[in-house]
Length: 173
Image (tube, rainbow, N blue to C red):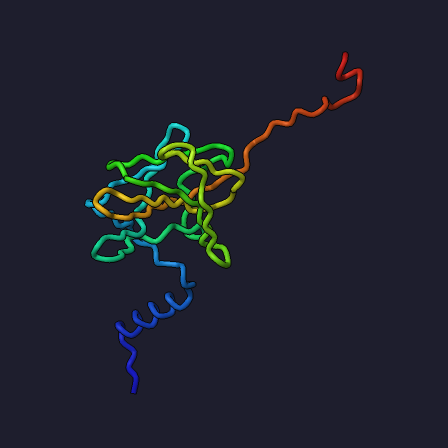
């Protein structure tokens, strides 16, 4: 006969909670920082924003440190106008850097490469919405590391330069 104990209640609660998550959702935990990895910051509009290491590939294999923050569970760390650019700042200079916007909430994950404007500066083009900025870097020691942060890519404010509104006497006096 099955006995209900505190342990079985906790186990059933955990199974219930995990069964109600989708495959790409995770239980929120404190970010994991690996001191052996260079830190990376996204720089935009005279501010910097910490990026979390996501995947690390070394000769020893692949290690996932943090899952990207999703819009359903986290607020974006930065609002960026889609007609502007951002740069990335490393504590250790990488050999190669690429940047992408990733939509993990799409039915099928969408990855869009960003336009390189400089060695570590990238343009967003005509993209907007809540997206994960993903920076992929290769370092001289052979490490391949991806870093992520959640951003709100906003449509640019374009001033309207149309005809003046009003009656002719209001417009011309």
